Image 1 (cartoon, rainbow over the protein chains, first blue to last red):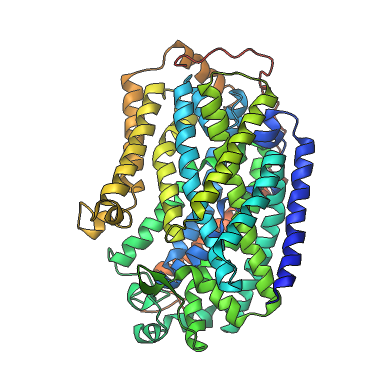
Image 2 (cartoon, rainbow over the protein chains, first blue to last red; image 1 turned 135 degrees about the horizontal axis):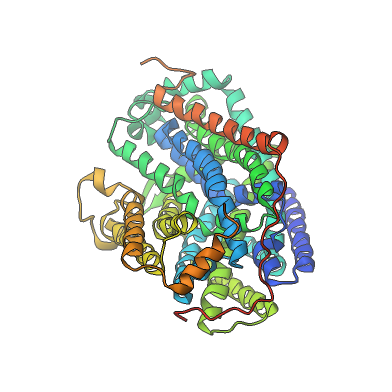
Length: 531
Length: 58
């Protein structure tokens, strides 16, 4: 593909976002404008912004690569993405979060928790956890996009990271959440076009839905081994069948599905989207747009992942490899880029490239914005005990965001390992830490400050301990080997134990140490608009 | 094992389940947009002028 064509398109692409950043800057007058887009967003922008934040390049490239290894059983994650990630998220969590955020004048998740339970320390601790761990997650987003650029253009990783950070950093820091959400709408459209055309292309090459799936089902382990696909051993029942019950591939799918599928409910960068709605109806009408958007992203990405094996087999393309610890190992992140590069026309390579770029930029911008607000507004501002003006609060957050952008850039230049696992790590950690206190805060009037403290810290510490000591992907590289050798246990995502534990601790300690008078007043205030 | 659209039952349930979940989202939106008569309730506005009390554990 012509590099100059790409450069010109990239300049146009970046110009649109920087222009939207400028418009956001013009519209941003108060802290409410910067943090929650003036609480004035309509359903389409909310849906696209939620979807574009949710679906990163990790989901499109990383998880379709994972699907090329484990087969179509990963479609259970697409089901949870739509049903839990959109329907349950908006209907069960969205409205109450918005109403409570309005009553308590909260603009971030930590601030919502802090204001609801009359605790600066809860706000600061939550802000610190979010700010620090989001940097790791954002570096995973960078890795995905760099993987694509390296395969497609051979552009050095560091060049991609620097250009990418510069564009996102400018429009985000200048334009605040207005710019982020408007750019999400544009990026969402590009992502939709890219995924729909890619899916139509793959299925039409294979003769339609039924024939394509049948061709995938007909691939034997020997055929898969002939192209070097790890699916030869990791999809023992075939690419379109569930793996054997409790086998290692089954546990792998289970941990990915629940870590990401349930973890989505407690993602601070997504929760902020509820707070931007102009009214309840905007959130309700966002549900179908969000559902369709996620369907076109994860469902399509996970559907085509396993079919890439068929295309590779039919066209004599070998499964892509990468170097790891001196050996060549399969590289699932490069599967979809390889197929596109080899089998699709040039014009589509450009469209898909921008779709992935849009996915990565949209998620990175939302993460930077949330992490900046967490460290600037929730941690630093509260630490200094300054209840400054609206303008000062925005300035502090802009500076914090700048520092985070630079920190992420530095970390990203030392790339981390497989993209999808990083996402699963982050989602699981956020879920185990925040989901129980957040859910009980919205639905159980007796939730107390002590309960929230114990639930939040208990979930966080358990999850960290699980990743360090037991989890099969992380424990071996941290302490040498997992403390538990049974794979059914050590392949479990911490969400299976950490989340119930966090609920239990929150409920138990809310009973043991009840709300004081000030908390009770705030509880009544927070429920005043909730029937 | 018999395949449905080239998928086994477990995978097919995930496939059709995703489509049905999307349909649920669409029907929910249609219901609230065109069928359910709701007026936008007047919510208690945020107390912008209200002086914030310091939090207890600050």
